[in-house]
Length: 390
Image 1 (cartoon, rainbow, N blue to C red):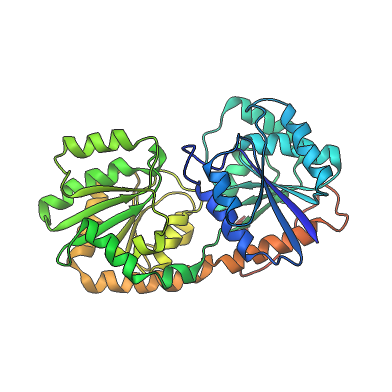
Image 2: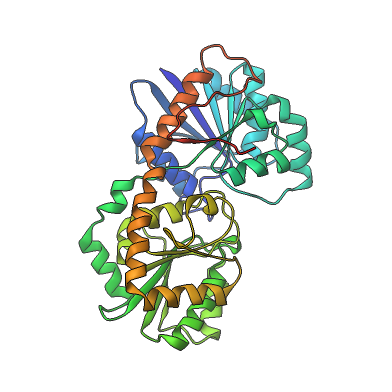
């Protein structure tokens, strides 16, 4: 039995709803072989609803509330390592990577630094990463774009980086609850209308203001469209104000946090991912698995996941006219929309949860049998690991 402790800065972006990473933990936990791996999670925050979300799904969750910059976090992580005989630390977030790498080195176990996003390089974190670069056993990037960020923004040596795409439960999106999907759709559109939606967090980097501005442009040409934002976040009030200023209240809706994302996606006619930056794009993978025609921005890992006019339409970020033009193209060309949706479904095979977890399990098994820090990680699974380009 290999004992894995995931350490994360916070399980929720808003203090209530689970983050995409927290939801990923739940998916990973359900997929791992329980005979070979014991999975635990430590949250560097006080107990919250997102932690309870994981506990209800059977995960053992610890809460370390020592403060964002306190070195008491190192001692707390060490205590968990010793009490629960942890074999591998799996670290998510800046603080977790800082304190976790120190705790791993002091206890002699390997640490995996997992980067899910392309972030702004903060001066104090750049310094911390420079100081800790030789205390990184392996860094997992969710795309080649994130791998570039790890090298240039986080000072991780190239030979220590392994690219492993995230995964989703494909069957959940291919076999949604049709009754729930119909109920969701009736809330926002009737059968004669086109329902265009995004599954998102209401944060600046998700580009939702451009989605709303594109909706305004589309409605000038095609007034029978309806738009919905699924998700919540700190920008909700600002975005609601924008909808009001543009006079879109009857036709642009905020659904809030939705438990059954597959049902919501099934209700869409077109899915949109208008992000300004994106490490991997779980929402893109989910929309593709649902077989939806997708319009996404040409940023980060999404350029690796989809190919323009083959399985999605890719547009420049922060460009509502381009986004509106692509949406109108799909509204007016049903055959193209259907073809892109079917191609997207096929492409989503690359993003299966099974491949993702198999690659992580292979990595854990490679790390545990007495491997010393600083080794170059071997190629694990061709089907789940993306090789870094030269």
